[in-house]
Length: 113
Image 1 (cartoon, helix red, strand yellow):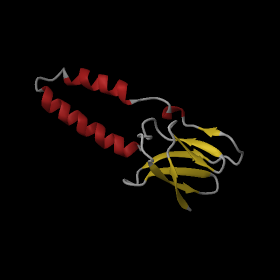
Image 2 (spheres, rainbow, N blue to C red; image 1 turned 90 degrees about the vertical axis):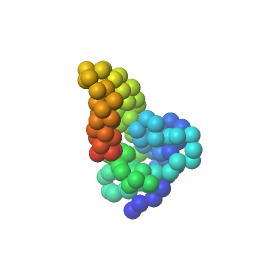
Image 3 (tube, rainbow, N blue to C red; image 1 turned 90 degrees about the horizontal axis):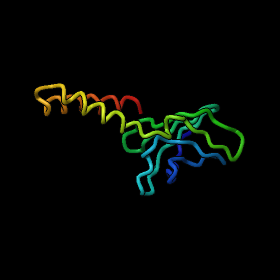
């Protein structure tokens, strides 16, 4: 079964009396909606536009629970950006290096969602 849910300000969605986390930054200040696929024991949350998975959680049958993936609370891009800038400075053609590293990051970002 697949349904839609609105992402809340705290980067969670509401599903059957519980809140489930999505990665930090999913909430974008709009009424952003995501798709939810629920099976018997798991809940998968995906981007409606790209169809990429954002999160997968163990489904809770209790009420009032916050089910959260710990890495959804961290802005993982800040550390990565600083590291990429450091690596880029090691090359003589920094513009080419930056473009190459950015392409790798974008490819990995789409792979991990």
